[in-house]
Image (cartoon, helix red, strand yellow):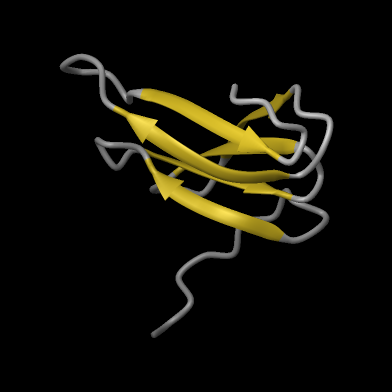
Length: 82
């Protein structure tokens, strides 16, 4: 396929990328202990979520109400879920 957009924010490897249930947001998780939330359409970096003390291995969105992007959860090598 064709590359549509390159998102620049992570300085190390990325383990997981996941769209929000409504498709408006994209989250990425990687080696530098943080999750980055992006605008899916334009690729703008919206927020950097910190708190893990080791690499973030996985992320998942769970919808919780109409008109909402959903709830984002992350799990890391530090044994925590945030």
